Length: 270
View (cartoon, rainbow, N blue to C red):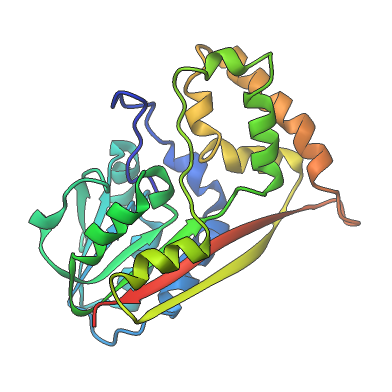
């Protein structure tokens, strides 16, 4: 979840809120289950979860491979405090997922779900993560691909508006994601055994405000952290909500569908 989360100049932003993140735990955990189901590794002995967040992804790894030694790694103290309640059999480590992690040794599975979008230089990062693999090991990653999503378009429209852009001109934190073709090119320089796919989820949300609640704990968070007080944060979210109401139609039963595109890949160390 929160592998590396720093402002320009390396200044830490506000810590993550695991309770807000886990409000949509079922929806956020489904991609974890889908990625795990595609990992072809019968009896991995060592697994690391990069950007484990509150531990929902790491728990699924433990459920799948209960005999494995598993590390959950995250840079957020708040997330790890929540994660430590998940299991005492998992080793929880506070560290930056983008740092040199070679001191932790080699693993049979290097796993990362919805985390590396917070870390720049994906080519360098994926090389580092791949070289943490034992022979025959697998790198398994899921990345939100939010570029064309209505919520992201609404966010960017508000952020760049005359009303709000003065708060974000000097310090911005952009989500990092590439196309599937770029990820293939990066991985093909490391291995020839690559599986790459996309899934478009349609999450059923109670209303438009629920979409805002979802995104406040992830993509909106760097911008909310820049605002100096709660009143401005409330107003900022309200301006985004007005645009979101035009981006997503209300279904016949009153719910709102929230399409969410995600990129997945597994790469094997031959």
